[in-house]
Image 1 (tube, rainbow, N blue to C red):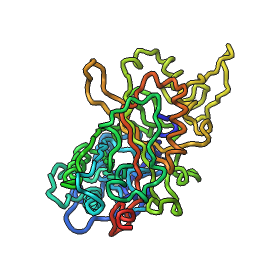
Image 2: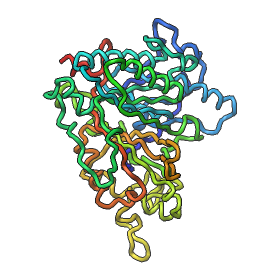
Image 3: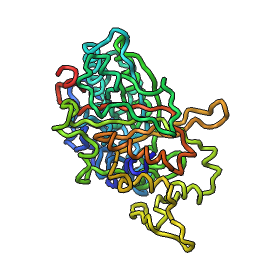
Image 4: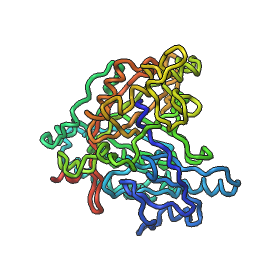
Length: 442
């Protein structure tokens, strides 16, 4: 749960209809999809007050309006369905796209007898479905009508390949070194049945039915080629829930993600995306996703006084400011001491340990969802964080930070890593192509 890496809210708000955003987070002129009448068109969004639902400003967050008359608030809510993210682009959508309110993570294994040919046909089907649904259109194969009345709602669908995929398809020579299995960590209590997988799909949307509709379409498209290995469902704060842009809070009540890398930073692409000249060549413009189900031991955490919680994190719970003083974005003074000579930010504080400058510059872009799957057999909440972080190389991003957390993070007492996966997420598909085509047809 590295505090450096949760998407930061965008401070801007559009007052015209929402513009489309590409997978790389770049805005493009709005358009109406040709062919079948889209849900987006049915919404009649031309007069709606828009949200900045792309990756403007930060690597994603919500732009919400300040206090406004009730009519303006109604227009703001109506505009949620109008947000549209482009499927085609240099990078896949769902990486620098704004945090969405609802998400599904699902891993698939290829069925016995399915190989490279079947995988290529599946990725072709999935890409077609994702493109249509993200544009607010019905899926091509027996649409369920679950999202019939809704707009695109900033839907994104992102695809990745697990380590085992390459052996199953005879493509071992194309498997990236960066996809080597993650090392074991002391905080791991991993359920193998809910870890890894041949294929991985991330779905996000600002409407729960739109997200579920996409999930069902993707599952149905799998057909005889692949079966679901595991599925996890999550959520974030809804657009417009706050009167001004705020950094997200997690289920511990902590502001989470103040130091997330921003696309405006000169080294953002180098840290997050595989370069055009990178290896293997089919991963150009892609990224690596580490996926972890992190259980929060909320009953234990909530018994702590707020002061003790703040010492665990290293930041004030109320506003996310460092314990050394200032506001949320003030640089943390790691050397500051109190009147008794004790460090104001404890030596084992989570925020201290995860700082990039304390980890050789290691950084990752986290884009998580919270989860709550009810109460377990012991009567405690089965809740926490679906941790998803992005980096150009996990051996230089996630791994060094997690190793350091293993050696003495105060937060480790209150969390448990219950599942894990690492996936190679290729670059975005150009028009007329499908995701992973360079690998599967190269």
